[in-house]
Image 1 (tube, rainbow, N blue to C red):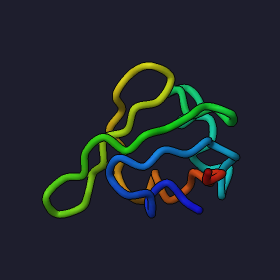
Image 2 (image 1 turned 45 degrees about the vertical axis):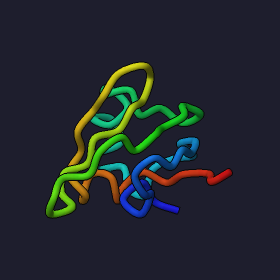
Image 3 (image 1 turned 60 degrees about the vertical axis):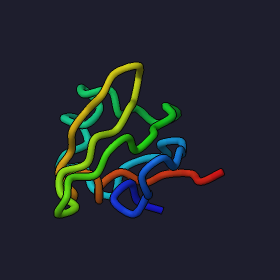
Image 4 (image 1 turned 180 degrees about the horizontal axis):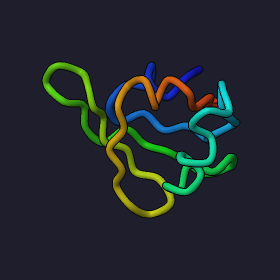
Length: 73
């Protein structure tokens, strides 16, 4: 499952990345495989989303969130 498909309030663990284009940028922002992520808010039009990862809030565009592959519970 991809982060862009996670609903508000859902929680999952980061498994990896769909492509290496944004991998380094996302890892620098705390999106590291093994970290838990929770979708906190979704903008009224659906883009961007606010997530909680590594102890802080992070806003991502859907095209960025689409690159993060998750393990679901």
